[in-house]
Length: 379
Ligand SMILES: Nc1ncnc2c1ncn2[C@@H]1O[C@H](COP(=O)(O)OP(=O)(O)OP(=O)(O)O)[C@@H](O)[C@H]1O
Ligand SMILES: [Mg+2]
Image (cartoon, rainbow, N blue to C red; front, side):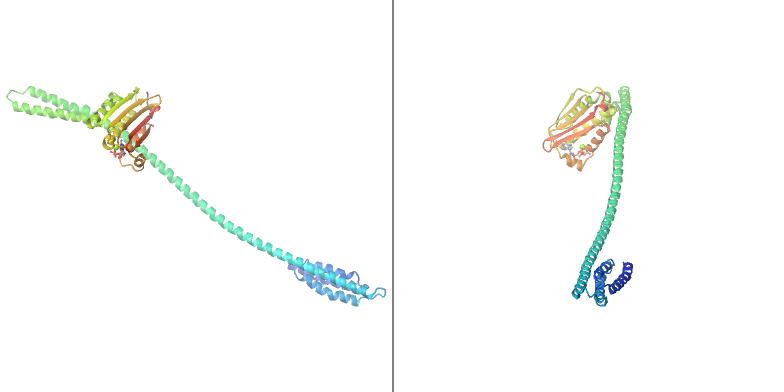
């Protein structure tokens, strides 16, 4: 900008000098005066805001001096020359004022533009800062989300591992119970029976004089028989052999009868379309669940009646145990389990890919239903 003023200024001086020189040789310089307006216009091309005005100021004495010192012509009246110079001065000053105004307007426009650009730049910077902090926040969220997803996955894996472990424990426990039951029944009980037989033959071979010994021997026989009954009962508690020998329906009937004897409950058992063959895992699972349900009824329900039913359909097998007792808040028990019965029930059912449904209304009784699908049951 400064360079342009430096170029224009000598040009203005040169042109003004040339015009003044021409004016000195032209009679009255009629048209020359107006050309100073052109020099003022040229001054407007410089970046200096006051240059057109200064040029007009400098041109004024030159226009007047040019008229005074230039050649006079007798045929041209003085008033023509005076009005010509007045007109030239008017044009020069109007041009200067207008150009000055235009330059001021341009300057204001430039300032406004600069200010706007400054504001845009500041706003852009602000936005870039906000954008950066947003990006940081987003990347933080993404990171947290990743951590959360990983820990969720780890949690799901450990939950699955726990479930698998629980399932394995249940299976192993059942196998162990079956083995202990078999040992008690087939080994200990047989040996007790042999002892009873031996005691009987010993008693038979005692001389008539050994009355005291005979009494003692009979007492031993009685206690051995009692012990044998207890061992058989214990074996049955560990694993009811009739479940394997006679099937689920018979085992359930016997369980119901036993419970009815032990409590004041009126328990009924009903079988609809008895299943022909049930895998051992399923029959053990359903038997243990029925056992837990009846135990819960006797412990918690304060019921007067209970009903166990077993039904087999084309889809699978369903065991239902219901009572008319006090009922309970199922959600509360799920959220805050107090015992292990219902929890291990759910695990057992999961092992055979079945489902458990518990409907319980306080003061109106409980209905627990287990459905094991066809895939696990050969009907
Ligand atoms: N038939 C029922 N009638 C009323 N309440 C029941 C019945 N069955 C279960 N409940 C309630 O559900 C709770 C949980 O039963 P669950 O069998 O899981 O545990 P528990 O019987 O208390 O203990 P555990 O079975 O480990 O000996 C019981 O404490 C009881 O309040
Ligand atoms: Mg229980």
